[in-house]
Length: 258
Image (tube, rainbow, N blue to C red; front, side):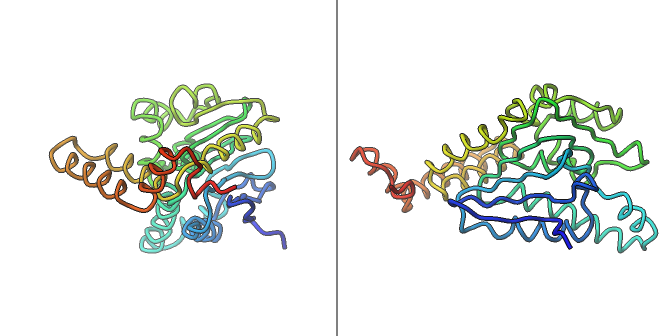
């Protein structure tokens, strides 16, 4: 049986590949559990790449799975919904930078996967759609991440119209960071990986946590004190001391290597 999820590690990069091309890489409860576990175990790498096989990036929830869940009890449906929410959080809070490579359509929960990545490159031909209302549903579990990625106004429009929008629109809204020809996706991905490998792993994870909190919290004394404590702690930590010393001594820091 072909695995629905392919995981590989090479040169300090974990690659996680959705591999259900015949189902447009839609996910069910089993794949959600596998993806969550994969993103919860990345401490030993420098970066993570999320990609897919086939023509589509991800069609979101598998319709057969959703039909089956609709017949379950409210308690079972709540447990299942929390699992999807947990997957989004596992990607968004992953301690390593996550690069999303979108080669094709990202619909429904697939947009959520995109929104949770730190850097996203999309093919010019890629399309996006918050399609849930067409099925009498709403993009609930993915909404906190989609709104933070593309803003409330754009999210409001596309979540009620369920219209398909282009990679160029996704770029303008902030959902993706770069749009390129399909045959250049790997080139952009690799350029980003080169940049990420030059940075301190712990500092990048701390930077992710920093941006998450300052995005969501009010700008008050508590937030200012917290940000001050963050730089104070990291400046006195191993990476901070090594990075400053390497700069002053005109050498590469230890995390770059030879």
